[in-house]
Image 1: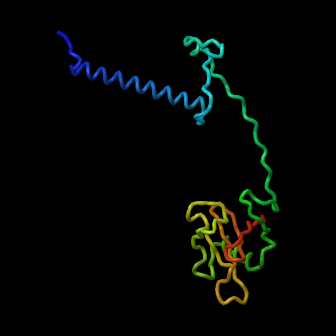
Image 2 (image 1 turned 30 degrees about the horizontal axis):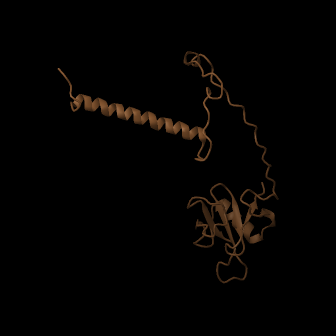
Length: 182
């Protein structure tokens, strides 16, 4: 009994060997790419034996505990204050410095209404991109009454799902984060 090179068993075994070699090559490429980073111009790294350090004995590897990474040093972050600008870079305004109409709108928002305008509570799209980028539906807008105006006027309170309040008195050309009083 002899097997020719075209026999299905030999053909399948050869194919399997090619797959294993290709997988080994690709795995080696991934390890090389990981060790040298994403910069293709970076110099190749040396193995432990090329650096003069003896390679670890595989039988000892199972008994030695894994090397520990040093504990990272915690980063100190500033504590926000009532007058400090937040990370969004917007100026702030204390709630008690808002107009009486803006404070009244915030009170209505906190009570859940009723609101004087049918548009109050609709989704604010943040098309101007001045507020921090969030998913659609995150922000909602409410009218701040403008005494003497025949329409809704330009003043609004914008709320975020995270509990934040923003005030604009120029119909979305600028915003201030409202610092809420306890």
